[in-house]
Image (cartoon, rainbow, N blue to C red):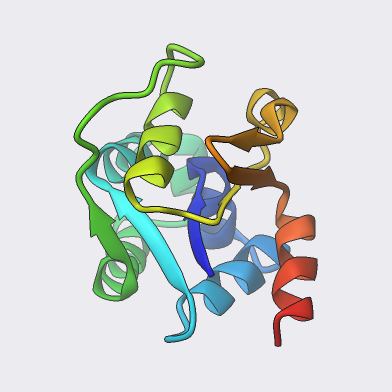
Length: 136
């Protein structure tokens, strides 16, 4: 399974245990592919620099988390920017398209309302976990 995780899922997996972290761990296994891009990493870095997030994960924890993600993920460089939302969510869509993703996993209501983008399903973490469970 090839998956792009929205920044909200990446941050949730960093700061607390639970479904987002469980799903991320599943995506880091060799039989799956976590797809990342520079725009997603940049947004993640901006969000984790916020003091609210630093209460849960200091700079060292964020750096180690990124190191693990980058060592295991498939890194793509979107050739063109998709314009659907006209905000950072477009970077997620562009990354998914370029990375030939099967799914985008997000908690963002606007993205979830799309349900699908160019054949790529947009689902919650809960739905993604159930899909991974069925594919075992």
